[in-house]
Each structure stands twice: as structure tokens, then as C-alpha cells.
Length: 398
Image (tube, rainbow, N blue to C red; front, side, top):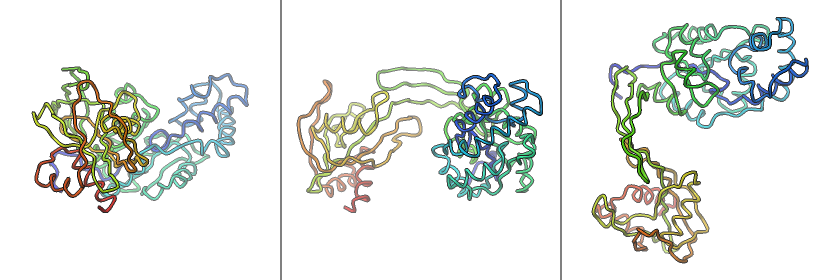
């Protein structure tokens, strides 16, 4: 696969653990509160102790609560008493992390962990969540020496895998991760699903800010585009339009015209006679009457499956015993953020349509073989319908 010469070529991605790979916040904060309460040290509710996530415990107890080194050591031991027995598993792997690690490995990118957490804890949780095997190196601290700087922990990762600074990316959720990356002269990514903030990352000098887990994959491959500015152009009943200024991975600036859409659903109903329920209606943008599966947009905060059930009832006057997901599609990814969730329906019973005031359509039952013929002869052109038909055909072996 050819890439632009200017794009980055990452050979090693190093991840922080707490707040980046795993949401360990509950166990950490409750254990810190437990230690403070045990020694009658005044402290806020555990939910307000998020400053414990990231830096070494000894340092945090001393800096935030003004205790001396001896008391800080006692607090750490009391913290670990609870964390080892209970807090360790008060955690969960972030959704999408396992898939990200798998995709990075398939691109032959080495993976490492650089954490201020005791290495025994890190390895235990990686094992528990079934992702330890993805990592080529795991660098944490020891129970007896947990004040090691993040810069030094990252340095150990780089040296162990013998990679160059310009081939390495640090991914973390706190300024300590960004500072550690800068000390090792490597690029860094601040992730928004952890415990840091956009301001924190910008102040620390993160090269990238990842809103979504999959952004890390795009950054590692050299495809990511970082939003610099957003200019609103139009706000309507269904869509918003804006013009964004983005920074490309090579540092160049480009403009992107974007349509925001709340998303939609499409439902492919299959009768007992292997007929597909289609609707036939006039579509104004194309000035054509077309065939398509029943569909509609999501209302704000609406569950996609519930929206699908609603639209199937409104447009076809139908209900289904089986109503299952067929996944999702991006109909126009070059400029539009719409996501269409597809569903299939079986065991159909019929009632009365409930069309919108500006909606006029016919419901048609068509044998699936005829539907496929119309797709192949370009009589059916609607993308969600084409995707749903072939997904259903493959799923049902029709």
C-alpha cells in the first residue's frame, strides 16, 4: 500500500494504562478515600479525588494533603490494602480498545504500556480483560519504587523495543503522559475518554487530541485530521452545515465542508414468501420516484432499534416478532456524518400506516430475486437498500 512520503510512519505505540486502556477510576478513588479516612485526614468525596489518577501515589498524598514522607508511605500501604483486595476489579476496559489494539497489530505496529501503576496490577488487569498478548512490552513501577517519572518509564519502553523517537507515539489521558513524551522527544496523543481535558493537553503540548478511540488508529497510520476551527454556515430542521479548518498529519492546513445529520434507520422486512417490503416514493433531491426500504431519521436521544420499530410501523403499518440489527453504514463519508443503522424484520403482522403530513408513499412486496435484479439493472439505486438486501441475503443464505 502506497502512502504519501510526508506521512508519519509509526513503529511503536506506547499507551498509558489508567484512563487510557482501562477505566480504573472507581477503584483508585475509593481506595484513596479509604486510606485518607483510615488516618482521619480530611478529604472530599471520592468522586472528587481524580487527581490521584496519573501521578505516583506518594507524590499525590504529599502534594495534595500536606503529609510528610512517612505518613505518605503509610497512606500508600493502606491504599494498596483495599486496592489489591477490591479496587483492582472496580474497573472496565474502554469500549473499542481491544479492537484498536488488534487493528494496530495487524499493521505491524509494536505496542507498549508505560504506566505509573505497579506493573503487577497492570499485568493482572490486562490478563483479566484478555488483552495482555497484544503488548510487546509492559513497563510499570515496582511496589518499592513507585516514584519513577513517566519520562523514565516511557524511555524504558523505547529502549526495550529499540525504536527511534520519530517512529514512536505516546497515547495518554493526562499531562504527565504528554510531558513524558516531550522529555523523550516523541509525539503524543491526549485522549478525551479518560480523565484529562482539552485545555490540559493543549497546555502540555500534545500534538494530537483524540475524541474517539479509533482516532488513535488514524493518527498511527498518518491519516488523522485535527480540527482547528469550525465556521457555521447553515442550521436547519434536519441538517447543519459547517466549514472546518483542519491540520493534516504533515502539518499542512486544509478546509473541510461538513454536513451534520442526526442519523437514521433502515428496515428490511422479509415475508414468509421471501418477499421484501419496499416503499415507493418521490425523492425531491433526485426528482425521481424510487424504491427503497422503509427508513427515517433518529429523533434526539432516540434508541436506534426503537426508531426502527417506530418507522416500520409508521411507513408500513407493520410489526415484527423478530427485529434484529444488520449493522450500520456511512452513506456519504466524504462530507456527511450521517450513520444509518440497518435492521431486518421477520414474523410480520400488518396494521395501519401513520405517515407524516408531508409523506406520500406506497408499500410494495417484491420477491427478493426481483429486488436483486432491479439492483443489478440500476432500477434500485438507493444505497441503504442495496446494502440491506445483500447483508440479508448473506445472513439468511437466500
